[in-house]
Amino acid sequence: MDHAKLTTVMRRLALEAGEKIMEIYDADDFEVKTKSDASPVTEADEAADALISAGLRAAFPDVALVTEEQAATHGESASTFLIVDPLDGTKEFVNRRGDFTVNIAYVENGVPLRGVVYAPAKGRMFYTLEDGSAVEEAGPFTLDTPGATTPIRVAASDNAALMVVASKSHRDQATDDYIGKYAVKDMKSAGSSLKFCLVATGEADLYPRVGRTMEWDTAAGHAVLAGAGGKVVRFDDHTPLTYGKADFANPFFIAFAPDVDLKPA
Image (cartoon, rainbow, N blue to C red; front, side, top):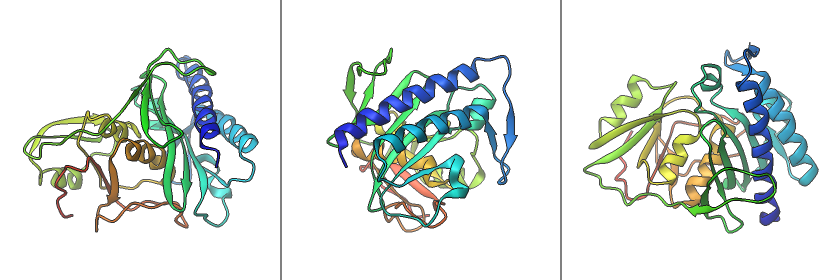
């Protein structure tokens, strides 16, 4: 894989998709449909998916492509592939809360090595560079010329006063019970893959997910967090979270800064 080209293409497609998403988000009304798994999908999801898919297939025709909106058409799982969630946080989008993201990632041998997470309504963009390190780019964003970037790094965590981030739409008692095992200084709520990015920038130390997610929900944020020195492990046995599973479904997981003293499930 040409990682320099990958960074350029992923960044540009994320921005183009974000622009399309915001056109629909800012409209007076938009259609919301329900998928077979009862989750919502909008014309923004579909438009962003078509745009990103076409761009990735043109740039990397020999690399397998997995996207949320085309999941039903995917064949056998692969260990190396591009994976896309064109609009993660559709509930946030529908409720106009702003915490939604465009996510594009590259997985090699089951490991998300490169990724971009763009939150167009928040004006925040995070991605991995050619060498795999992670940065946040400051806006305003232009398609062809990256703006000023700041290297991001996980926090040197204080286990006596941890900052925890949890889901805005999927918070439950099981999550609260697990968080209760830690000495927590404060809590943040965030939607979509932004939670990974808050750990990556040091704005949070720990993000436990005790609930259903799919690989396209997590791959880009996982890559950004890894590029910032963070880790993502399975909730049950603390082994690395891997990708390329037959049904693309994730087990429960924990994303964290390495100084955090992880508690058992």
